[in-house]
Amino acid sequence: MLKIILLFTFSTLIAFCSQNPSNLGKIFGLTLLSPKTGSSCKVGTTDFPEDTRQVSSVSLNFLGTFQNKRFWDDLNKIGTALISTYAPESRWVFTVNGLDGTLDVFDISVPQNPYYVKSIPFRKNGWGWRPTNVVYKNGIIAASAEMRIRQQQGKIYFFDPWGNYLADTYVGSQPDFVSFTPDGCKVLVANEGEPSDDYTWDPEGSVTIIDLSSGLNFLEGKTVTIGFNEFNKSNIDPNIRVTGPNASVPQDLEPESISITPDGRLAYISLQENNAVGVLDLLTLRWVKLLPLGYKDWSYGASYAGQGLDFRRSGPLIWGSPAPSTTTYLPTWIKGIYQPDEIRIFSYNGEIFFLSANEGDSRNYQSRQGDGDGDPTTEFYNEEVKITEYCNSGSLTPFNFNIDPTLCANISALNSTYNLGSNPLRVSKIGRDTNGDGLIDEVHTFGGRSISVWSGDGKLIWDSGSDLEEMLSGNKYIGKAFNLSKIVDGKQVITKANPFYNASFDRTGIDRRSDRQGPEPEGVALGKIGDKLFAFIGIERPGGVAVYDITDPKAPVFQYYLNFRFHDSSITNTVQGTKQLVELGRAGDLGPEGVAFIHASVSPNGKDLVLVSNETSGSITLYEVVVTLQNQ
Image 1: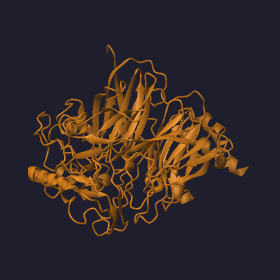
Image 2: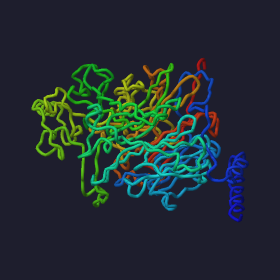
Image 3: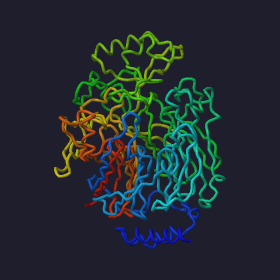
């Protein structure tokens, strides 16, 4: 009884101190319930609210930010603001803080002034080593957590909109993404199952499905985990990459993100390192198919090649030349592997499509011990190799491929033509034999540097080509792409001197990422505003959010780009200088990892919002989606 009285008193204080007085009754109603009686299941609900606006276009305005003043842990690749979700009942944002092992909570009742409320201490509570993902649906928040030894089984935890614990259950190895079905009756977890750093323990990837239709009681009996044991190298498409040393197919397939069809029947799971998407039937709990995504052709005249890509650290490019002699096209024996991080399902005229953010990712496992500069001291496995070293003896270790001599001659000629220098294009050690003669004759770069639209059966419908690099270089969409270095100075049109062009997230410097994956589009949120569907894409390396109208999946239209990031070449060109700015709260946003859309019907100010979580700077930032109506 004493516990209930104390809980009631504490809830009363929260309610009266809240900037949203209507929370009072809701808090009373929720906190006095038994902790396992809630449910997110509401048959008939969808991901997109009704909205009758007739929309012409959208843009972004900066609203507010919370700067955590915590630079990420560069050695362990973890920060304090990875993924966020918004609970409309409390007007609170829940943010994954992987560095401290907490779920941090912020009040955005006034979006211009987000403020810290509390932290839910996963690590201190013994709820795993750190949360990894969080999502809200129909009054329930679900957060996955991995163990200190990541290869062990993880867990998923459920909370109410005020962060009160409700329930938990075990899932698979290294849970990394959580997604509800549109009606909230099931929650799915992508268990990535990455190997240990020394690659001696490689668990199988899997997807966990939890049935919430009867509430949160006895979840262990409503949980099933689906692996990939039915697949082997003889029954999967040969274009699905299996690249781990001595890995079986079930071990090598690593689920990255999940999106679910509007009817809740099928789940699409991105398998990033494998350059594939798995389709899972949620009624039969069987795999429908593994879809290989194929290769991106950056040669002159190829479909969706755009103007090619910037593959050299040679300074800013002047894009736009249609001539095949331009330095941005690649020969046909170098192709890109799309490798999307996040994918999102949507429908058009009754057909299913999915949007992919083609970040790219190589397998690179190193020791967690650093030297004086913070670099790892031992490299156990690295899939990357400089293209100029591809034919060197021992460069493809641990693999021993037979290489077509013509490929080696082509690489030498490419180097002679472009003088690739000490920072040539990185490619995968695992190339492709295109003619079946047993010799590798094609090499692959990581990522598509683009976003793509695919049909439900995995056919490429549209790709943004070189849009992102051209826009970031100040050669395209001029007047629709902006930097915001200081809030008081307002937006600045991106020009050809953009300091963030193919920059890294921990320092500025033009062209720093051109020889790798370029800008790296990563997180995706979809928002239906009136009669239009918009995609909001986080661009991880330079920062910022790009917006496309994807209402017609065959003809998406670029809308806007805004990047809130400070630049001063005397400070931000080094990691140490950037770190100091972060700790002063002056760096802006670095390394957007998660993007969430908040519809006007549930947002705290009645406006459409975009919420961005920035892993490197540990900041969360809110943008208003400025809607221009038709005939306005």
